[in-house]
Image (cartoon, rainbow, N blue to C red):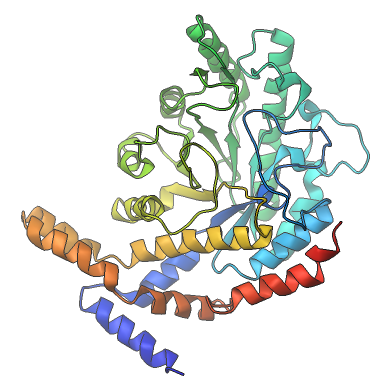
Length: 418
């Protein structure tokens, strides 16, 4: 058995030779919150009993053990917390309100309907993030919500968004951590649309009303998320990237960038430095699109690593909220959660271990040969040793042990769910 301390000292010395302080990188990684989405645990079902998913959202697979109640979802997420190091938050959708038999429309939701989630987060020492739910509802069945031509339907969704902002503010105030309230709508058209500007002006006017109520940014930050297209909205999406980039910039809101919400040849990592010249805050949704916005579990791929490098190289971490957004019901849901969350953190650690100052110096000096050589060299540095040390310091199972915990939980808990 190798001496882990000796291995870590070797890794520290290797990185130090390039000007990288490994201990500092680990401390910084531990301070960056990762917002982990609740909907991986129950296939985006929520607790409203609204029927099938709509709004271009689809979850495939029927792996046994899906969470069916708030209690089961909390139990499953508690298992995830034991297997993911670092600072964490739980990201909720409005459809996860705990109503306990009460009949409440989405336009009338209140903080009390999420009190059990606030209590849970307080007990676990984590924060909460929040999202209005504009899909899987009778009043979203025609494909339009905040941009709906029907003033009554549009008003319902405006009231829902307002209610969600109040809930997010209450969550942030109760937990003493900022709660990001992220707005995404499925609005769009299956076929070509003539009056595009009409739909977008209705959306703009709805947003103006929603955000007319000020909240303390210490409690909640408002973000808005674009979409390229969706099932049933293949030809036109009202809330496009250009629309929300303009609105967020003009109104001082956070811009959400989801890795899967762009053309296949577009890379979010290339966009970050551009939008951060103008946007106060950025919310990232980390996912893995496979040919389209399919929300596969994050792997340690080039784009996730490139995104994290941009955050570190541009010194954007303090202005960025990092969240996960994927769902896979074809594999163990706990394992899917853990694999994606740990890979997000691995990518950030790799970025924090990059010799950025040396690379910048070479770039300033025009030493592009040296820059390329160093970028290639760091790919083979002993990153895995540093990651293992980080997990050990966090008292979290390492790469050789966490899956055993998942299988134990599957045998003891998930297998009992029929």
